Image (tube, rainbow, N blue to C red):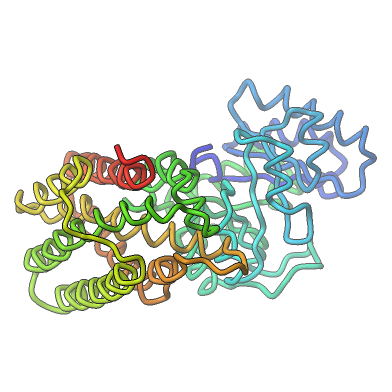
Length: 424
């Protein structure tokens, strides 16, 4: 699934379709630009639900439009739909993923910022932020986010986002200005005299207000790498505290070499920024971040009796050469892109582990707490905004080179943990 699949997300409601055949409404809406369809049937018997889903699969799949089933994993499986959307009171995500397998789309509704944070610890494909505004189509919803709450949720989320609740041609502009990837629309299409014309109008508004920042685009491009990282046995065993000490020791000894180099480079990068508040912010982030990492390293080195007088591995050398090469290039956008994964991916991994932590004692909990901390997260978000600022001013060629610098560094992040686990 691509973020753009979420752009105009139709949620069906036969009761609001003015007595028309549902397939007719969906077909016309797709002609108007709908990019994803969710079949929502709260009261239909299971057999009828499955047959309707199969007809929509036959209609949509040849056009490359995903069909998502609301709530019912059994219907999604029976109809071979493209995915499932679940709410907070529905089947839990882990059960849904186990039933549907790794390749199906699973979306999750979130009703407050705490649930956005919790969703960051899940490998969902998108979150539905609900509701943005009050809506007559759902009366059992939580307190509306409003636009300010939506902006906070989008910034906080590690996943693509869909705005739900009160979406129509008058509101989609504001939610896309807030940074969402999609808007879920019900009555504005289902109850329109012409679903096609309504979808076309919505698409026109969305295209004027849709923004894709460089960081969102490069995160999507690197998502397969990130998923390999959180699925790596090093991260899984670190999270539950079963990682063999010798593996953690091997990793931390290499990381001690790496962060000394990275700390120097953070201040070299600060020198590349124009003097003023932006440079001051980055220097403060670099100092606070490196001080926190050093304190954590020193504590763990003493706790585990780690000998840090070791040779840099080939992976460590390659990673340091990659970041230093971009620093030495003198290009601020390239240097930012190469340096970003070390802070961003660590922050996301730390938050992922923290969200999935168990209550058993974990010898590596200080490592997790450092990278999952609010201070580290806030600083990382500031650097993300900085990256987007410079990427927005860059040429298409430079942005493509930033992509390459980031993706190479992300691959080296995976390789770094793999070396810690396997020693080669």
